[in-house]
Amino acid sequence: MNVDYNKHSLGSELKDLAINLLNERSREVFRRIVDAYVETGEPVGSRTIARQIESRVSPATIRNVMADLEEAGLLYSPHTSAGRLPTISGLRLFVDAFMEVGALSDNERDNIESQCAAAGKSVEQALEEATSTLSGLSQCAGLVLAPKVDSALKHIEFVNLGPGRVLVVMVISNGLVENRIIEVPVGMPTTSLVEANNYLSARLAGKTLEETRGEILAEIEQHKTRLDSLATNVVEAGLATWGGGDTQSLIIRGQSKLLNDITAVEELEHIRQLFEMLETKEGYLRLIEAAQSAEGVQIFIGAENQLFGHAGCSMVITPYANSEEKIVGAIGVIGPTRMNYARIIPLVDYTAKVIGRIVG
Image (cartoon, rainbow, N blue to C red; front, side):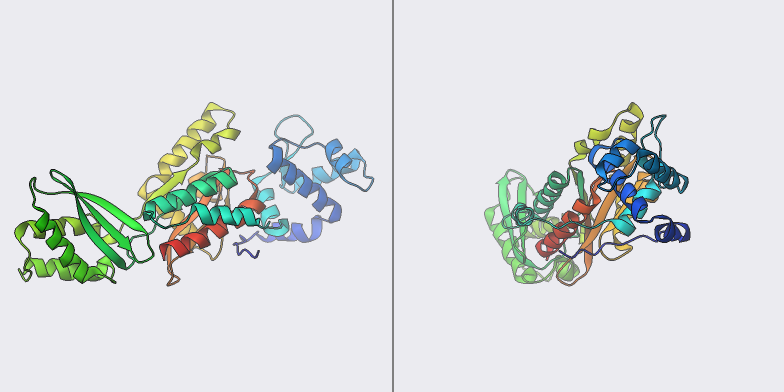
């Protein structure tokens, strides 16, 4: 499975390091330390590495290699033990220079396809399913920036819910359903709802709401319709619920999965602040900006993205496009810096392609 993901510029020092300093033995030691960090989050010592390497290399030799990698800024010792962990720079070098992206199994693809199936669901429901599925498969928090709803309409209908309330149902051309509840005068007759249905169906079928909104409102204002006053109110209220189609929303699922690695109260506060930031308009604008800044999957490790400056998290995110190849949203995961990037990149990439088909 070929996955396009953006490799950040390493900078001249790291490039030289990757070429010159990391010989075969250094690369193997470095890779094993990163692999262990992804699996356990614990520092790795020279004796552990020596036992893993097939060629006979003494722990003392391994310690020398680790010392060189630490001096280069790729490893660090979290406390007085002899074990080492990769630094953020070390993780970036590993992801960009040495990591081999994995492939999804047929079961994983089928799982994503079936969970994200759009038939009979609203756009929001389909995206929530996709986000939850991605969270479950990645064991990280899943997030999706939902698209603006501006696809062509297949059907519109007003359904009486009882005194003073009407459900507006819009079926989009790709089969997704959008529902809104509006308030109407108590005692509105069924004939007024039928009039509103017929009027909008004749003008909206096969077109986007934005293509006809202005025309319909102008027609109403100039009294060119034959609608009664109550039906006119229903039409205006129905159009108003979509707010011009200029808003996007952020859906996040699986936040609790970020708590698995937390060991201190201050870390919990940093995670809380992160999600508060993500729920602001500025936060999700940063998300879409990050996703759109390059083609393919983007990987942000730790403080490389200002959203995660203090949270100790990483993000893997990619934009998704509609049938016209226009970017309409973004999907990804947020997890600890020791997330399994090689596994998560193809998960995010494939889910984005599935969502692109759903939103049409």
